[in-house]
Image 1 (cartoon, rainbow, N blue to C red):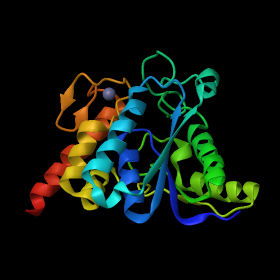
Image 2: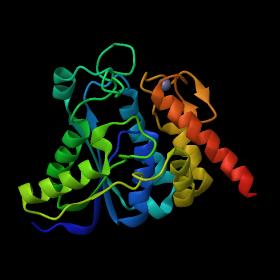
Image 3: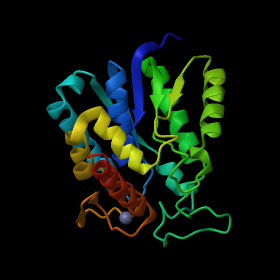
Length: 239
Ligand code: ZN
């Protein structure tokens, strides 16, 4: 299987992390496609943010415009059917006995990366980019670097190919994720991610904060807000 060296497929949900990963990929690869998953998540609004972000990137970042190609949306309603997590059920977000928040959808990232690899195979794309992160996360075991490395080996063996799985956020926290966005696309990119990306697990886009839209109380909002506050104070301390 011949895979194009300068091509990437980005797991793009419309959240802060994946929007930053998309910019990271656009900065490095000449041909970038995106893939998003509808698994009946409560925050489905995230997916509707994708088109706006892709449009804005094409309009406001001429250096990247010609690199943005197909956007794939995959229906994974199956995942909502077989999982019992708070992201796919109307139950309160809390910690479970195993120290994982009940927002954990078992196997989600394994499934996402596997499906992404199937699409990448069909499209002849070598690089697969995801926003998994071990540093500032909720303890999801399928975000761990070891999980991703094992999966890369399994996918390459199972498909007899040489995909490279990239996780540019793996070792950075949310503050540095905002900084990475600024390094890639300046304040303009940070502002676009604040305004157009969506992280809130409750799918709330009625309340606008300095860090963007969200309920302000769920774990995703708290991580995003804390990181943004530290990012802003970090900027101030440097000047
Ligand atoms: Zn929220």
